[in-house]
Length: 298
Image (cartoon, rainbow, N blue to C red; front, side, top):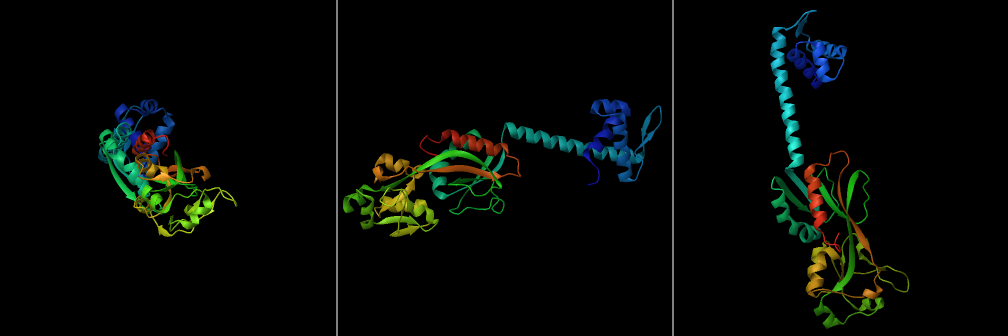
């Protein structure tokens, strides 16, 4: 579009006020600036919109027809701006959230009912994936990332940190005994991740350092799958507090080798693209989730 909103606004103000000087005063511009805007508009349209004399301004037939369209355009822009202002006060629209399935199930899902009650005009769309996704390609507004961030093209909002522990079910420990030393793990069934390999490095103090690379007896791509295996007594597992808090509270899972465990906390961030404005619906979602996470969770 060749015509600018400033030029349309100059035309309507001149016609409504009856003079270029009065329009300039209303717009906070100089009379020469308003006059130049009108001239540019006429040059772009290749038509005379106003007959100018020292005493009066008169719309041409083409000017009257164009003015009607200009008013409709400016009214539409004003309406759009008002709708955005309303959304800032009453957030609305679709919000696409992505997180690893354990975080989605154990942290996000329990908060959905309360969030929807408080923000009924926001349409939540929840997606789970175990891998880091491309936000644009997957049409995602905000993603929850656990661990160090490597993508510098993203804005990140810290939500906290999350502790990890080595755990096992009471049934497993009753059948196989509870390991008292790190070396004793060699005789146990260890549950690990297929990827990333870093999750199979358990922060346990031993003779060679503070990290133990395990060789899993049974592997899975999802932390939730490993949790279910541990609950079923399949072996020892190294998992995040946010997904095992209820299990530890009920006694379904117990921490083992606590005295040998180095406290490790993974950072948890919400990420979104830098080149997009942070919509109010994203802000209120992150505020809501962050305010309700318990201290020991992210």
